[in-house]
Image (cartoon, rainbow, N blue to C red; front, side):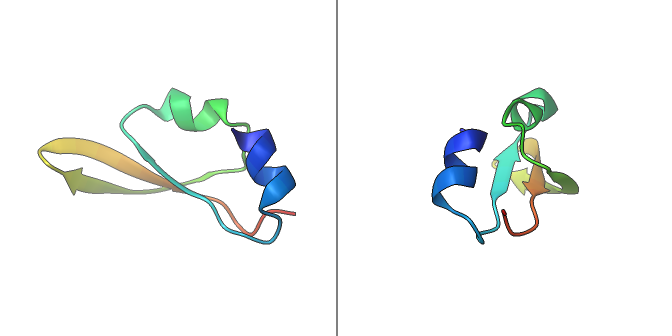
Length: 53
């Protein structure tokens, strides 16, 4: 997923919302850890990138 995002969405920022940090890390994207977000009783976290090169 990370490779496709880098290839097709240069200049875009990516946001991933997940409860599993390992899933965000598996993308290989340079993600910054954001805040926790309440989502239907689940505790999930927002992960963000800077604009992709």
